[in-house]
Image (cartoon, rainbow, N blue to C red; front, side, top):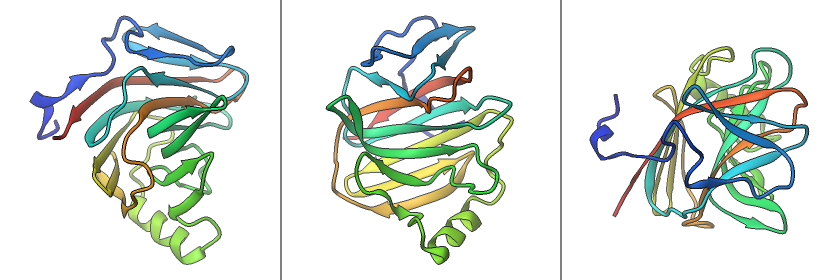
Length: 196
């Protein structure tokens, strides 16, 4: 249990999608047995109606059991020309790449810092930090902490990313369906603690 559990506010009530919306003309988001299920045939995001600056966010994600799978938790983001632009904590189903808990900037600098794509030393160091924390066929708990310039990402309690960047200091939170046809991405226990 989180040390701040008593101060967390649910972002998902387990029954409705109140506080969230799908800004796209495609993709399906529904509540099933206390979980958010995303299905679709092309990439889309379910986004919060509210924006957040400094916070601690936690959520569980379960990737599809079979086939290719990729998702993410976007934060300090915005909608721009039909795209979610901003930071993303990667949920990576590729057993070779193993970048879950990495930080990229969607529709921006991409893999610019944790790890730096194409930089073998950075990629190897990231995989060493992640170790075997991410479970491809099980629920995974992600924790994102934003305090000013500092961004931390944890996967199942393991610190995978700890960086400084001030390009984006507030914005929406979003969960992603990467667009794999017929695949269902499942989310639960989404909650946030805003920091003053």
